[in-house]
Image (cartoon, rainbow, N blue to C red; front, side, top):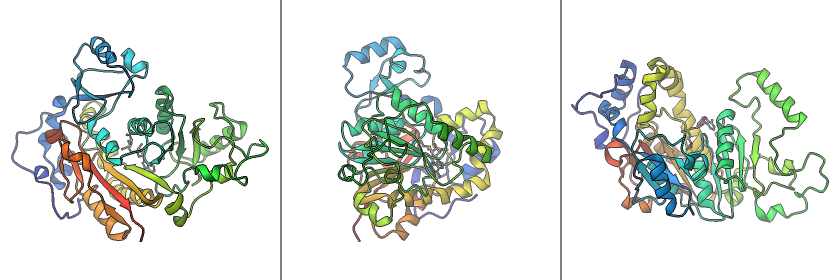
Length: 409
Ligand SMILES: C[S@@+](CC[C@H](N)C(=O)[O-])C[C@H]1O[C@@H](n2cnc3c(N)ncnc32)[C@H](O)[C@@H]1O
């Protein structure tokens, strides 16, 4: 797999003579970095990047002192990101009471910035097209507040089930619904509150065709369906192209509605008027910018990295997948709505090139300046208005962020 030509490679991504990384990076990964103009020395910084946590909004400030004494470290407030704190990288939060009681969750500061870039307002209908394992989904739900809706989609059912657990743990599920589906073809629009009250869509008899309150107990029909899906092949991919709803909250707007109305695929024209206000496409990628993730392969085995990350077939398909996810996410956006595309890859191929290809085919898409970024510790991407976070510049994981608006054409 070769990186595509790029108009401009950000200067700090160019290869330079620098001290070698302390990690024993395997030859295939070094070759991947070389092909993409990335500096292996980045991977020696894994132990210097803080771990970030987000305090659930609304917690009293005394909670910070409580958590500090429990974790036995200072919580350093991240000045440019509300509710975010940095802690030393070696501190584990999973065993702490604060984590178990749903007061904090782990999320990188760059990920927090991507969510702020989306500028979610109360009342928005928000779609997260690659939602699992769910840290960004939780932050989106928090930003939404007490009106609007959140739809999470992921192709991997077991990973999306983890999102459901997170939403429930942090009491953020009421306005949410979760679909196992392919994000490149998902076409279900938000439940529009005006339509919800129309007689045609509201169920009269509860004969199984109407959404009643969500329960974790599955019906006989559903159990048969997943048995069939399991027998048919991969447990990760839906066996049909039909999205599977695995969770909806009591205020998600579904309760009382006819299933066929809610699960009805939309047209492009309908999306322009009744689509999502905000869409996040945090696309599947090679994860090479997630320095801590790459570090884990030292224990998992470098062969696993070859198979999971660098496999030519997989990486080649990835570019197609990323463009497909961005294209479909944009299709589901209402006119005037905005979309954030992000990846945790540092390559130009999976970021600027995908953005360029997408813009060349979509005259109704325009890049938007991310205003709060003026005070963020990041740099410009290779295309104006796009952003790049990386360990050296930002003290965070690597993240590319681009924001688009859907124009009326
Ligand atoms: C970078 S991760 C998303 C991380 C997530 N946004 C978060 O903050 O926790 C990418 C996700 O995309 C999912 N994915 C891969 N192909 C997909 C597809 N065709 N449609 C939807 N999701 C897909 C993967 O299962 C994975 O969970």
